[in-house]
Structure formats: structure tokens, C-alpha cells
Image 1: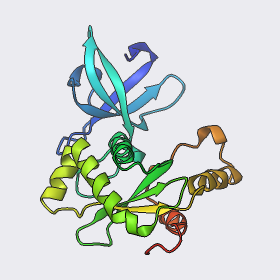
Image 2: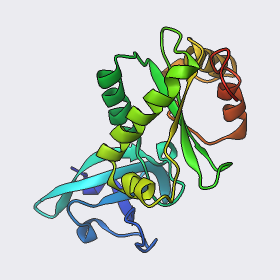
Image 3: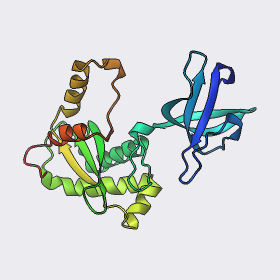
Image 4: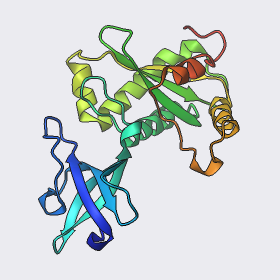
Length: 215
């Protein structure tokens, strides 16, 4: 529950087609998601946290919120807005069905195909040969369709191509974290990278695909 006296809060609706005009606490609707803007007593003025919350109810006139996802960890090519939670649930479902262990994962929205599609980069503690990747791609695509309605509709309508699975070398994500620390980042502040958006990150991870893989 928000503490109204701790600062001034505004909320941008995340619903597709909604206005970008920020709303106040008493204008929020239960069941909908909003990006939070904070103005506090320490000098932050209209600071966009990048956090998206969901309204689950009201206590008197104060909204009760749960964290949904970070906007930086949202992937969307055609308005489907797939969250980190949906990606994690789909990967866990693939692991349970296939028996293939996955230690880390990240997704890249590949606009180089027509139409575009997701490339899911997975890390396992063993070699997963490329001839196994199509089967795992099919399972993961189905699992993501099961947990995310908008993505499922885009696939059914052929607005998007089904996702593609590729495996990176073991310790790839650990190497990424080590490089961040060497660059000056605090180890305690490095968050899992589940959405690849920058070209340099794409080059890093795709450069570490398991050997004998296709480009």
C-alpha cells in the first residue's frame, strides 16, 4: 500500500491504446497496470522508476499495488508486451516437459525476418546440440502461448513468426556479470539480463553460441 504522505505519485496506464496522461491515486482501476512516476521529499521530480505495478484493490482510498515487471525487461515487437514473468514461466514449463536444464535465459527481438520473431538464448550446464533446438523451440513457443494471450494471438494470426531457441556456451551469463563488475558496476546492483536490446549485447551473446551452431 502506498504511503501518501511520503511523496507525490503519478501513474501512466500500460493498457494498449490508453492515454499517456498520468493519473493520480484515486483514478486507478483495480486489475490494471501502471508505470509509476515519483516526486519525493528528497528532490526527485517526476522520476520515472521504470517499474510497472498492478492495482489489486483499495484500502479506504489508498490503492494496494503489486510489482509486475520492469519496463526495461519487457519485450514487444507488435504490441504484445511480453513480460519477464511470462518468459520465466514459459522457460520453466519447457524445462519441466523436456528435461533439459536451463540455468539462465534472455530474449532478443529479431526484426531481421519478415515478420519478426523472438530468439531465446538459453544457457545449460551441458551441451545441447543444434539438432535438438527445433524441438525445444516448439515446446517453448507453445508454453509462451499458454501463458501470454497477446503473444499467442500474434502467432496464430501470423503477425509474428514462432520463437527460435539457441543455446550459448556454459558460463556465458557469468562472464557477462564479470565484465560488468570489471567495468565498475557493483555486484549487488547487477540484475539478470532477460531482454537484450542493445546491439553490443546482441553481439556479445550471439558470439558465444554453442559451437557448431548456425548463425
